[in-house]
Length: 397
Image 1 (cartoon, rainbow, N blue to C red):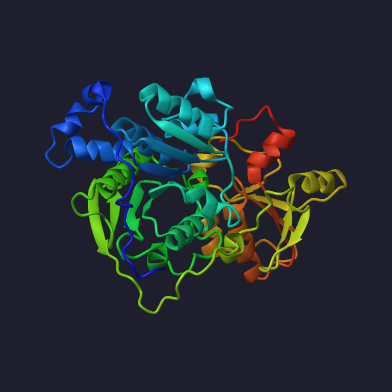
Image 2: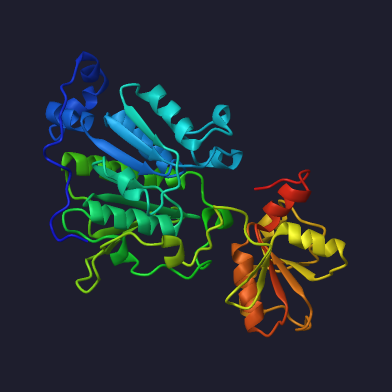
């Protein structure tokens, strides 16, 4: 991390406003703190949003509506029906389309005066600096730790402000990192949590309106950074509890003993994530916790060959109400397994553990190994992978 203040370049071009701009942005123009010069600053500004999902949706729409002249979108996913509960930039008409393209269409409907750059790629160490480099500010709308660390480190190397947000269930967080000598994401989380400790929104769920709140805060902080207005969230972590309708703050400072960021690294390895993006996960992958990871195809083949493990579904009751597999014979919440194990089940009984997508079941499998079970297997991809492969008549979620 550099020691010099990070800020938006002063030499950025500030194009003139035409009559249509003046009509569109008139409510900005009559603000003393914005005015004509501030709106010209926004018109000449560039912002990259990493992720066009729940957080990216309000960020992208509000920045476009505010008149940010150049908006970049990094996202390689496609629009799925399960996204529409919270990712309001997408709709039924764009199901199956790349999210970046779907977002671009909505932005241009809202404000055709924006330039929209698409980066439909997975952000990795080999391309991050090139992708982030042309933009004044980077907004982190991601949902996984490897990409958050990657975005942070790339912003540190490029000396760019990083507008951070995260959501889970009913709680969200926001801050501004690497701004004018302020702290970075690594000052908040010097090390990533153990793999599987923090479930994703896909596993734990999220209230649909929550990303609207946090994403709007990110958009607000982005505009403040661009316009050099007010007090940003640099040095502060804002925590929002939707159930209590309560905001609170934690002060955050730079760690003077933290090693500087000097290069981009392998962030999947750093966060303990197995990256199977280059191909299918191996059929059987030994785990350091002592259990084995089995693909749904391998499990199917073994069952057809007469294998009869105790199939344990460790999802929550609300998920069992959505869909169950007839092959699963024991339903036990993964938290109960972590604290209590499986009761009087013999330790030499083969155990196959399943959740929605494989994360919580891996934690449960490791807990069972620690309790002395000799033969434990994790169903990779979980019930959704099994349904897609063998039971398309059942719903996924």
